Amino acid sequence: MTEPLRLPARTLLRLEGPDTLALLERLVTHNTLDWADGEARYGALLTPQGKLIADYLALKTGDTVLLDLARAAADDLTRRFKLFRLRAEVEISPADDMAVALDPDGFADPRGEHLPRRAFHPAGTLNAEGNTEWCKARLAAGIAEFGEDFESSEIFPSDINMDQLGGVD
Image 1 (cartoon, rainbow, N blue to C red):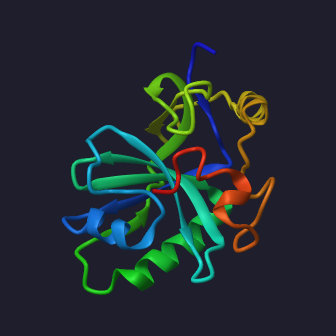
Image 2 (image 1 turned 90 degrees about the vertical axis):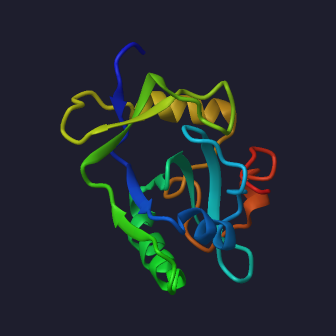
Image 3 (image 1 turned 45 degrees about the horizontal axis):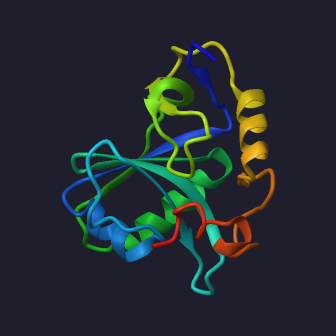
């Protein structure tokens, strides 16, 4: 792969504001306290019983966090984050102006160095799709995919090895 390949089953959610990291620290499975700009983390939002609502890759830039997640999970995750936001100064919105892509010049997937790198590109700028490449890479690495291998509130993080892949702090 030499050019970026769009992943149409993925979308981005933007969390922006001075309380973004504090909100995430209260709600998600990964640590946000020592998170460097430009670093990606793997995480999830869980039900009160500990089952996975949605997993994602998160990239921090300043007081903005972009969540790369399954398109099928985006509306539910957005609704839940807004519900739990309370008085926190955080704007939560779909990043429809951006697209998720496999990109050799992108950031490393925090689940393992053997996985393709990713980047976020302006929507509409990528013609080629990378579903086949991503499917081959994730299956070879044993990575479960929301919508393909599990649905919301069906499994625990350990069922998809989140604890082994750095998704649980």
